[in-house]
Length: 287
Image (tube, rainbow, N blue to C red):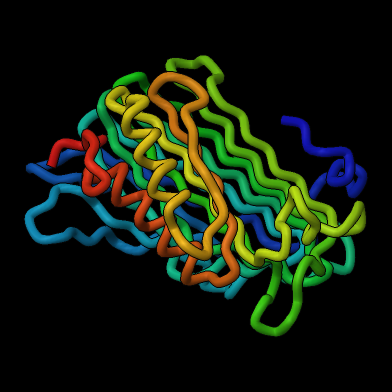
């Protein structure tokens, strides 16, 4: 796995600096609901026991970082596997804070595998890169053709409430989606404020929050992708859109001035895809 040259230049991350966090979770259906079949975690990563909503069989998990944030040299690895019939919603307990680094960088690697008709809805809270930080995040998703995925990502320009915008040094985010072993989608975002203002037209254009949504399902058709685009484009205060880059896929991007605006539009998009509510369209899941 290669990294951008700016990160490779720092050399390999070593145990002497930062922490090596690991979280592995395997889910499968048991007695009418999704349950943990196997788990392992090592600080600074941790997972809370699942909760359930009413009679729903879907397991809700919160992933935790009890150390309070990501610091120089941290290496975080999360691997989650869903067996056929498993359904889960995964989020984080709070924003991911990436702190200033005197040298080097921090790394987060996520890998999710969905087998059969498994359903994963991954909705983490925002990532806030502090001034002077360098952060590399890569998420790989291995999907069976009959599985369903909804993945969101929310990035802040920095500690916006304190007037800190684009003070970080490097931010790299990659999403790699493979279906039946074939790479179907790769989306990369690399931001380096030293290369030029990110607030200019064509980039963040004065906005403070950037949201992305990735969805895959054998039931995701052009009509549902169009409804998603209509939902986003009709929202006041938000600049964005959505499209269908390949059959059974939808991608959305959006910019907003406040964290509440971006969270609300991401939630509305997730709700549309998940339940097929207004605007009308087929649901991705059977309720």
